[in-house]
Amino acid sequence: MDRMARFVFATVVLSTAGARGADKPSETPRELRGAWVVDHADAAGEPTPATQEVKQSRMEIVGGKYVETWKDADGRPQRSESRVEIDADVFPKQITLFTRLSAAADNQVQATEWTMPGIYRVDGDLLTICLGVVRPTQFDSPCSALIVFKKLPEPKSTQARQSKHRRRPRLLFAHLGQRFRR
Image (tube, rainbow, N blue to C red; front, side, top):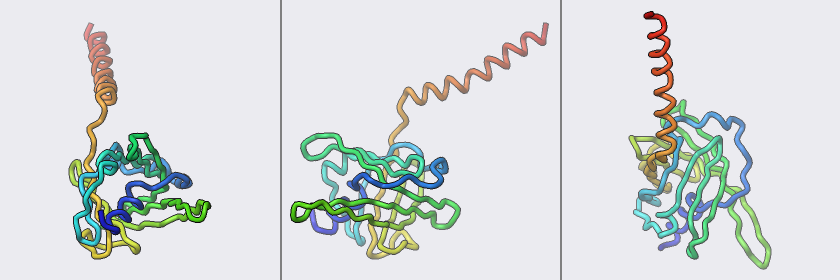
């Protein structure tokens, strides 16, 4: 994998923990809720091969946090959280990731917070995020990273719980209707 590909996946997909919470945690747009996996990515217009770690990674945007889980090369589960800010009221919709990267040098760990401004769009079950050093204005902007995520289906237990709640009011109203007909 070339240097640019490692940079894209290291900064976007495999960010490390240590970010603060957002000011508006409950304002995650409905279209971004749920779990997503990497479908494919491009760096500066060139397709980027996905490693096994990247293919198995999972991303969720939850209450102002960008949460990722994956298995490392040894199969151990890993998790990271980064702060995220979303502005869905502009066009194109904007996303900003605040990622803390750690690097070991000379027996010391140095942490740096990166700000990655970007834009996003949701088309059905695909989430496209375009990130750059400065905020891109188009999805085909040069010198940017384009990552396409595919939405995972909701767990069956969540679907069953939602459908169960939908049925209750109908049963309640049917029962009340029978009482008033007497």
